[in-house]
Amino acid sequence: MYSGAILRRGFSKLMKTKVPTIRDVAAAAEVSTATISKFINGAQRFSPGVEAKIKSVIEELGYRSNPLAQSMITGKTRSIGLAVLDISNPHFSSIVKGANRIAVEHGYTLLLVDTDENPSRERPLLEALSRRVDGMIVFSRIPEQESEWMLKIGKPLVFFGRLSHLKLPSVASDDHRGGYMLAQHLVTQGHRKIAYLGFSNSRRNAERLGGIKECLTAHDLPLAVYDVASPSGSEAERRCSAIMLGSEHPDALICYNDLMALGFMKEAQTLGFRLPEAISVAGFDNIEFGRYTTPSLTSVDLQSERMGGAAMEKLLATINGDTKPDFTVIEPQLILRGSTISRHA
Image 1 (cartoon, one colour):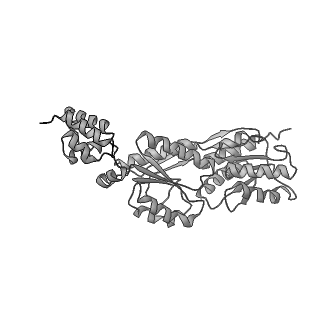
Image 2 (cartoon, helix red, strand yellow):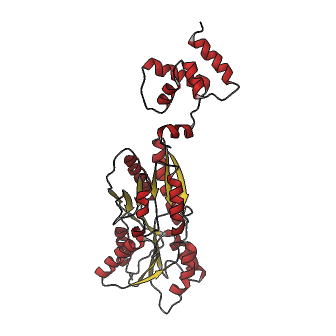
Image 3 (cartoon, rainbow, N blue to C red):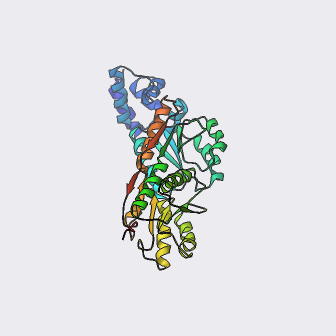
């Protein structure tokens, strides 16, 4: 009669020539494959002796569980989907970083989808992604009233942004407050001809614009509003000449995001304007690049990485049974740099 140790040595020698399977582990540990499966998936605890023996065999044989096989057994993929609007925008890269940090801490893998600022791509990409993950975190350009289909995906969802109708957990920055803070700073600096270069296809645009308008109305100051087709630096470059070469250009410009602010600044300097003497410029997101431009960029820090982490924590709570559709607000912070200047004599 062979002892368990001898059997395991024999199996260990055999495993040098092939990849060990769950059946091999069960045979060497002298338990059933069902016991090994339950142990690996954490579905059941066993006596300390049995668990120690299984761990020893797994280590000796060099067994690695098959994630696909595990997901077929448990119905869980241990993967989370994250849909962003444009991964080339550092704001979204920071959100991914924050979300991934929390996912890794909890043993999940992050799967990323970039919808490339194209609402028509969102639904097919999200529906395909939903079949590979345990839950999703979603940025969307689709109007909320056209997004009821998201509720039928059948997976836990967390949404970025304020929701009026959809009953989903969500995370958002306080964009209204951020807009107000930035406008108040410019007014305090003595600016009286303030303009906003926005992106009206974003629901967050209305919140930022609302904060700016509230502040300027309180000071009895007008606001000139311009719009772009996409929230990119190139679009802001394109709009720059129309704003700066008119009969009287603004003395301060707030842009929908930092990429637009940087694009506008570059083109304004190309046109021969000195910044910030000719015009103060500011944006939203506080992306890293803004620190290294000349002049460096004043911006509203929306705490992008923190937003990503908060959304992931909320989704994992939802996966674990917390189904309350609550809303988390991340407070913004105004970061003052050289692109805004005092107009006081």
